[in-house]
Length: 313
Image 1 (tube, helix red, strand yellow):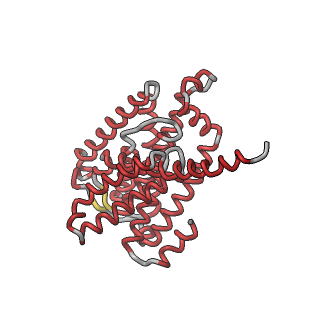
Image 2: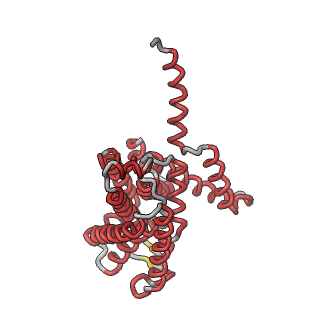
Image 3: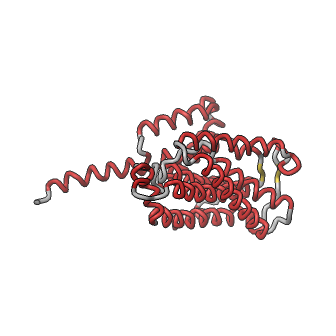
């Protein structure tokens, strides 16, 4: 698949498809970060968009107030990562001692706070209108940025794979299954949850920085709850608790949105394509409650199990 994605720009030279695939890579990174919380730790967050927005504004403001060079772009990513660590630590310390729904509500409140700051701090963010900015020359070429996003996706998948299969990742999985038992075994659950929250926040901030480079524009919508709901849908459609699942979910959601919006331009009934998109989501989630990866796994196991029963003991 990686080879196919590397060759894709040479097979299909459509600019819109290049942008679509780039967005799939970026939202796949964001969805994987969300799955670290939901799938691997059992933490529900309604405000994960705030880390996405922090990364987006950090990169955009840094490039807008300085030269549009790669150095300042990397500085913007670094600022976003540091802010994500600080905010995720503060939010985690305030809420992770309590039940998970307190964390969900508190993150939602913080996301709304950042949304208001982005709208009101006009001298820095230009308010609700947002602002355009120049991107580094190296990233201005769509083809180059396509490969940057693809390489980022592969590297972050490998890093998160190492993280989730490490001893810390195994404890996080155990916490998602039975938090009280893990605590009884002597593990400090809060510390592990904070690690999960910080890792998810930093990765989400990085995806936000890439996202605004695609648009070359930023506004307060990056802090909207729709961004979090997109990540939730991508994770649930692809499969919770798997890193491949969010990638497949991201591709499914972005393709659905793209093709339904295209149909809306030619077929009048699809002008309300968001309504059809919502119905499609409901059908997919009801038909595949375990997500694409979970459904494939369960069906594969069903096929293997009868054969094992026939084996001589």
